[in-house]
Image (cartoon, rainbow, N blue to C red):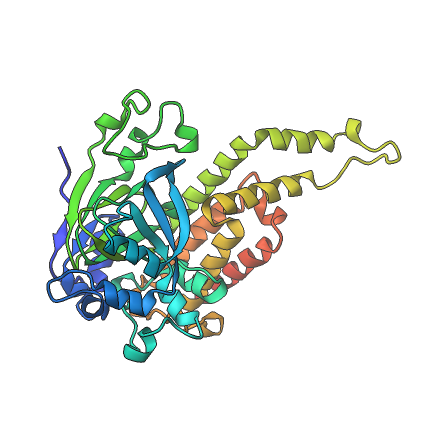
Length: 414
């Protein structure tokens, strides 16, 4: 039996969204009124609601995109390659490439940062193809990444009918929202209290979940049949909000284009922090043999004969190795996490000197929780972090400075 997924035709106010969905960590599908002003709805779609492939090829054909082959599994993901967008569209137009799925396309950032935008886009349509709805503006991830990195978490997805994204949970239990510009999708969503049912037998420590919920080996995943996912179909113009920590799988029922963001803020900060701690523990367990080698090399027995002192700094090296693997595996490490928190807190306190408005406009105070709520959430995570037995605050370079800045901002806010 499937669980019911809430829907609302009217776009909620920020206060309604905060209280009914963010704080409750509750999913919802919002009707087309939320994004009725988006230019993409008219530029990318013909009057009969089919995709205007010729416009897309003219406007964005020279963009290099990542294309997943949904017919070829690559560990927990799909085999990927780089292609020009016009070449992918030509494949679809010729009746080929039906398993090809354009994923994680940073189109908004590309258009904002490329000196010569793809032909047709700026000249014919100078306005952006979409804007972030107000209820999703309090977005720490994209605010920080847009200001300080060459990356972000804003994506366009384009795929034929039958293409899909395997079962996964978004990075560090971040939220996601996804709007269908055109087409239909089917979602399978599993609330956090069902997560333990999704793991491979004996694989809980490494969080190895089923790949495709439509074809699960009951011998390898003996608890999966006990899970009761929410299964929902998303239509054109509809926006789905996926709460923190919900595993999900998505299938395109028709040719489909969607705009997606991963995001976080003070509301799900405790979940992100706990997920970071769990990821570090997972990596530490996986590299236990490395830790033993490092510690043994620092023992007196391994000391150079010309020195009476053991090697120093193996703990520093160990922490550096763990943080490097964490970053490579999941995109963040502790330094990234706390720098993002510092940036978000400074913006919430109207410290615009740290902000870059070019790629991510400043979020008004009325579109975020109270400053007291924000500082208390951050303080709780900080207090726990400084007590961690790994002592990362002392061993990760510059991290103590970042935490000191955060504490100073909190004191100033009070």
